[in-house]
Length: 453
View (tube, rainbow, N blue to C red):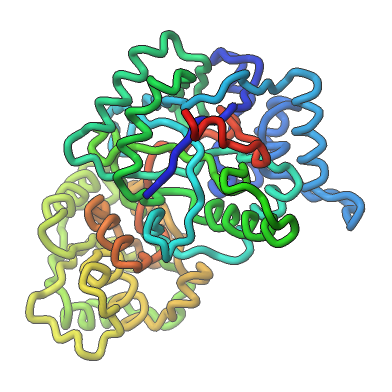
């Protein structure tokens, strides 16, 4: 089962929110080019310069964005911009935020170094597919910088809330936070250090009895596996507790009151053969179609439509479809008597029962003719977290169809992962994202002393 150990974190020397907020960034995979440039301009020491370098004219074998990232990271360690903590620790993390639903929440977890396991071992489990290009990019960063710059996000079962209580106790005994920062989305991050092995032991014991489910960070995890195997090939005989056999993970109890899975909605465009009236006829073969009379251009009408969709959450497979051509909304609910014999649904029951699986397979693939490959490449599909934006972008004509979905329940995420299956892209949206640069870890610092604790 999982081994989670203490490590000597690397942190910015400026620990307080006013300064540190200028130095952290979101995870690499949610940063647009414009946002990347804005973060880089914010400070010459913003972690973005290491996390997500920018290609420059003249780059080649002797100079590229990865070499520049490594130089920056090394120089910051040398000049004191970054400092490594003197003793190994676990790092409790609290994130105070307002969710996409407008409600204030607090989510807590703790950051440790988790031993890497291949998926087939059944210790660390994914729920999403990965793409080759992002993994190759993250592997290059790891090879050059040789550090974990941001933690992946992992969940663990905690039926009796033992982990949740152990974390509360660890935070209570840790004193004041060692770092605080505000990210651009309004999330307030507070970080503590627990360097007493006895105080960290209850958290480690809880984790040792449970699997870890990757919530966010599949590409970074698989890149870390590739890096581990690369080092083992090039430098055989490394000790079992060599640092490259671990990855930095934020671990959150599944019963944490601030843990929520939010929906990611879908937009379709570039459908040359789309005929909304014909599509409604085809949809009626598989779904009950409830045409809404509310004006979705009005905020009150949108809110009412979203509330109608939410009534079906956890009860039936239901979506809210918006069409640009007529500006109307329709509630689509999968019929119990639908003949699915000709639909290429997956054989795994848990996977085929997911709302997003039904949407992507029956509607996108079977009725609209979008192949799984074209969906993965995003040729006709766009993703949006804000339901209002989906309606606006559809009714404006920017997109032809919008589909609002209910959130995927956490138990379904777990069930799909345990079955060895993967969900369609953007099936889950864990918010808020974990900050990059709040605490980091050297990849080649052995962890045997910490394990002994």
